[in-house]
Image (cartoon, rainbow, N blue to C red; front, side, top):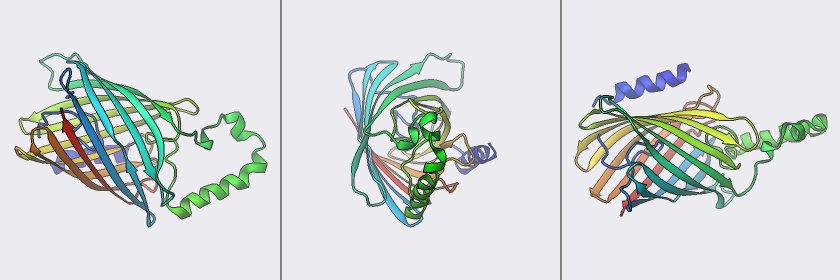
Length: 273
C-alpha cells in the first residue's frame, strides 16, 4: 500500500496541469471517452520488455466500435515472443465498455468495462489445488527446477496477477476520469481479474496527461497489482496526433519490483473512423 500511495503522490507532483478528446489514449489505462455510435477505433500496440538481460516482445491489435452513446464493443488479440522463444498467439478478449451515469455537479466521470479472455493454452500452475498438492513431495523438486529456470531466463509467463494471459478469465475495470483543467486529465483504474481456476487478482492504475499544444501531450502512468510483491510499473509517455483521426503513443518505463521487467518500451497507434 505504501508503494501505491508513493506512485500516486509522484504522479500528482510530476505534472501539475491534457484533455484527450478521444478514449483509449493512454498506454496502460482506460479512460471515459468512447467512439460515437457507428464509429470506431483501430488500435495497434507493440511492447519491448527487458528483464535480467532477456528481451521479450508483445503485439496487441485491438478495435473498439461505438454501439450507443454509453456503450462500445471491443476485441483484443494478444501475441507474445517471450525470451526469444518465438511469436505465439496467446489470447483473445471481447469486451464491453460502459459509461456510467453521473451527476453534472460531480468533478469526475465513471466508466466500467468487462471482458472474457479466451486463452490459447492453460498455464499448468492454474490447475486445481487438489492437483497441485497431489503427490506434492514427488513433484516438489520439479517445480523448484521450473522456477529456477524462469529466474535464469529472466522471464515468466505472467501467470497470476492482473497480467495473466495464459488462462481463461474475466477481466474488469472500474474507472474514474477527471478533468483537472482544460488541458489536464487524471484517470484512475481499479482492476479485477477472475480466472476460472485460482483466486481473483486485484490491481490499480493511475495516469496524468498534460496537453502542451493541440497535437502533443505528455503523461505519466503507473499500473500494478494490489500486492507489494506483484508487478508495479511506472511509465513516462508522449502522445502525438498529427491529424484528428490519428494518434501515436510511445512510453518508456521501468519496474518497481523484482516481478516487473527492468525496462519497458511501449508503443501504439490509434486510427479513428
